[in-house]
Image (cartoon, rainbow, N blue to C red; front, side, top):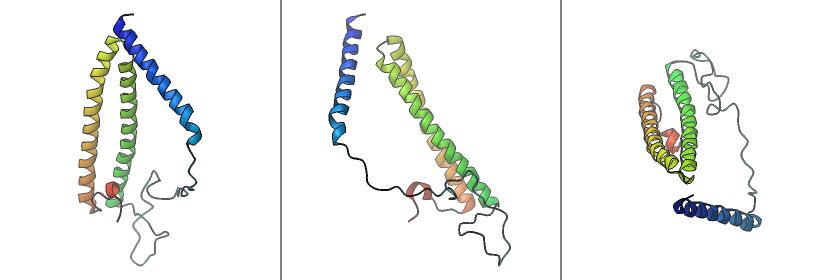
Length: 158
């Protein structure tokens, strides 16, 4: 083992030891939150896999629930957007896992693995930016087609 690897190994061990000691030292001072979380509504349209509820109801017929979404063109576009949002969550998780893998390669100390990590980092970053850009473009097109609230998913409903 050369001196550069020994120095990197010593730095890595020092960082790990500091982390372990800080966890041991500060854990007794951390208090759990006393706020009860809101119950999850599994029938919410944002939680379900399928967005639309049924056929378009004739005039004068009251829908069975307040947020009834008919299966028409707008319902189809909302469904496509919902699937894309689910895919975005998966893409973010994959990007995190890829960055973690590249980080592990980077701190290994092996020059070949460091070179591989240097190749992985830009690829993941470019892929993530392309994924976000594609999502934003598709989101805007679907909003224009359905006449929905622009950026309501990003900014919330005021």
